[in-house]
Length: 122
Image (cartoon, rainbow, N blue to C red; front, top):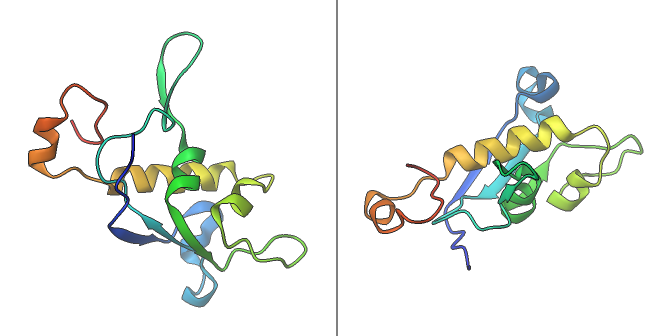
């Protein structure tokens, strides 16, 4: 299934007090909103049969740029892959993925058309 990732957004996470820092030091994430249904890559099924949202896949799929995130060697973490490769950022990845998911809304007409599939808004 092809996703139409068209509308853009940006987000300042609260992770580790980031939102309390001076504006020029805050981590800022730029992303494309999900337009349409969640793909099967974004919704997974656990061994016990329960479904869950795969936030790392959402982050990898949707992030276009990250600002003001530096690793321990003063290297820029400016892409989704660089963020996902870091140890200790699971909370940040989850917060970003949840924000993107919550910010991505289906128009009313599309919701009605997609009632048989996993939609972002029920």
